[in-house]
Amino acid sequence: MILKLTRPIAFIDIETTGLNTQQDRIVDICIIKIHSNGTEETLNSIINPDIPIPIESTQIHGIIDTDVKGKPTFKEFAQKIIKFIDNCDLGGFGTKFDLLILESEFKRAGINYSREGRKIVDVQ
Image (cartoon, rainbow, N blue to C red):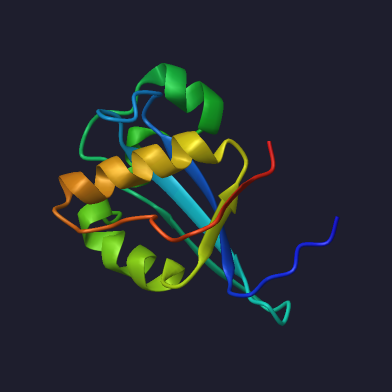
């Protein structure tokens, strides 16, 4: 199947402190944006969750509390994400979880964000 893009698609991959989309926090985000002409851009960052990272989560993604020390919080990094995914459809693997936790983080940061009007591609 060939994916015909009418606007860019941003593939999002997120690592978190846990699996609760309302309470857990993002510790790593990587977004690869593919434009309709095939060019790609990448935005990625370790994120300071402002809460301890449980050992169970570290065993999955390898990120520990000292890795996030001095890194931007989600609120500090959020505008870069908003700007990067503006006018993009969204995609990923297990996208539902990533988008729910992303929306929770935006809400916690007091930032208006909606995926309304965006196509969602989940390769899972």
